[in-house]
Image (cartoon, rainbow, N blue to C red):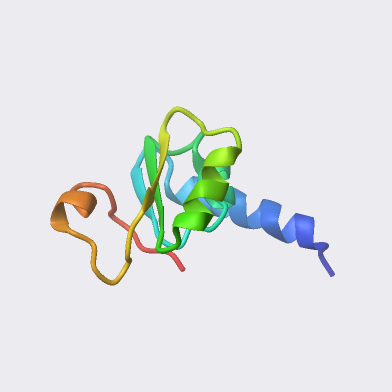
Length: 91
């Protein structure tokens, strides 16, 4: 059985491959771990969360230049927020 770290490493690798060279919109980013791990592969990452506290937490750590964190409601995103930012949805 894989350790939890190995599982996360596997997920980061798979997601990074799927978003390579693409602009990414991440929903429910929480503390931003996925956004940070996929940043080297992605063209850009807009990581969103409904909770301002989660975005505040995400911004306390190192932020790659191609990552932005924003408070947003995933059920009510404006076209301006999402236009051209996502081609694929992964959950």
